[in-house]
Length: 137
Image (cartoon, rainbow, N blue to C red; front, side, top):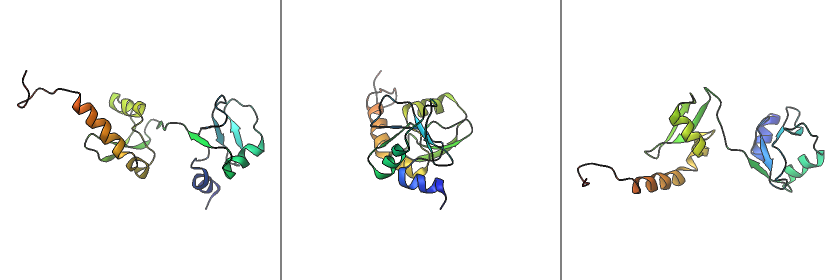
C-alpha cells in the first residue's frame, strides 16, 4: 500500500486534495504533500503536531466539495435516481449539477447519496405543474 493509499484510507483525503480543519474555521484550506507534510494553501507553515493530531482524531477534516476538472470523470445521480458517470465538459447542465453538489468522485460515494437526491427530485416534481393530459390549463 502506498503512502497516498494509506492517507486516503485513514483520513479520507488524497495527496494534494484540499480540505479544512474543523477546529480551525478561520484558516485557509490545507493539503498533504507527496512527503505527507501538512501545508496551508496560503504558504504559512503548520505545526507538525497538527498532522499527528489529524491521524489521532484530535483534529477533524472537513472536505471541500468535489469539483471535477475539465474532462475528468465524475459520478452523479440522474433524474431516474440512477448513478451515472460522465466526463466534465463544463456544459450548463453539468455545471448546475456540480454547483448543487450532485457530483461525486466514485460510484460508491454517489450511491450513498441516492436517497438524498431522490427526495430532492421528488420535491421539485411536486412543486412543478406540468401541462399534460392529466392537468387542466
